Image 1 (tube, rainbow, N blue to C red):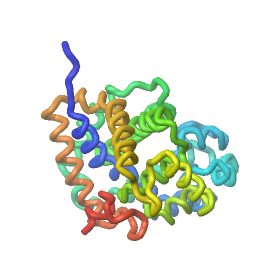
Image 2 (cartoon, helix red, strand yellow; image 1 turned 180 degrees about the horizontal axis):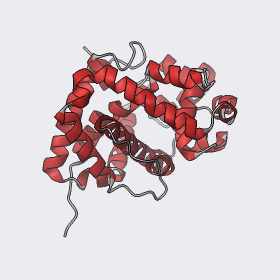
Image 3 (tube, rainbow, N blue to C red; image 1 turned 30 degrees about the horizontal axis):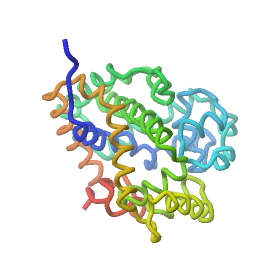
Length: 296
């Protein structure tokens, strides 16, 4: 039987609708409370601990490699020190408790809806087509047990699909010849990612380092003098996104057109609910970001 075919824009659309259901965890106060009780108090330490814990007590080099666009010097401030405060297994349990509390708060009555349950079934089915080869963050999270409750199963599935796509995105960026910092600069230049100052602070890059990367991108004809994308830069970004979509097609194609469309509709509705409930703070994402505009 021939494998199902899904439009690349549909792959991107599905990913955008599912991704916030996972990434709300990086902004949820429940994480701060749970990890704070384990002795991990700094927001950057909490981020590195919760996202890396599935890989075990890894060192800063592994984290830098799998995250790609963080300054390794920032990571080294907190990793492996975080593992002296709490074992990875304890961090993972705390993260799941935080996800439970955050989703119950953000989704309200929808947390136990038929739509949420159906979305969890479809998203889990999609993950069955994911392969682990050269997808380190995906593979680490895929080794974790599935939660029983539908809203947590949906969150776990969204996590797997997000990290699967993310691993593929790193391949696309590496193949396109951009460093992690350069990729971050290009993403902010689209007006659909982080605000520049937030990107610099959270990823650990100084204004001087940002300026040097921008200069290199201007020399390549990808960035304008005022920091926007040139036509060539926009085409470059489109190319890396197309390659990312190509590398991320399998889980959604495995659903078939009808179930993929249903998952997009259900996930989109749930995402709108958490955005309206304030899952992401103001002033973090640029005005063109889905996570900024969808809250209006």
